[in-house]
Length: 171
Image (tube, rainbow, N blue to C red; front, side, top):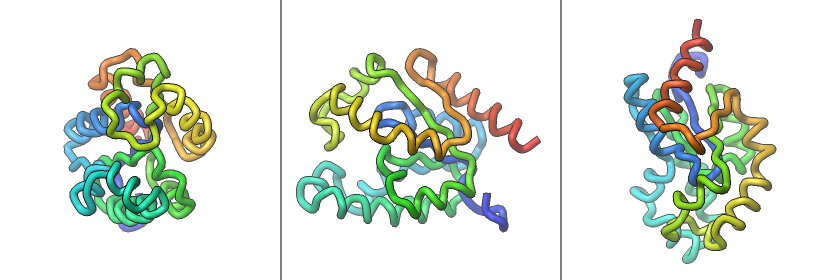
């Protein structure tokens, strides 16, 4: 939380397919705050992410993503970041001000979640997902204050556990 009390109530980070969006919506209801999915904001403002990647490249996408993330962090909400948003050093620095929860998921559990081709960096399936997660895991671990696995528990329970953790942080 920033000094003036404005800013993200909590930020959810983690691998693609870990359940950040679905958990974030549930958590926002529990906390009675708005929900912001930065990927959805990018789509609303700039178009389909896969098309941005194919037409303009990943670096262009990352600059758009950085702007959206920086804006979202100033709002008192549950904020979910796309899996690669944490790659930007400015975002890493910004996250130090907020409670950050990492959602993890096993390769076996994520397989059904990532099918459908909407994720441009995961066209190679679970093997591509695992390589991506392995490369980012140290960063996710360094940036997060709390980690919870979504592989085999209902996301309502995951959201409740995060809410309880947040409560303990404020008491």
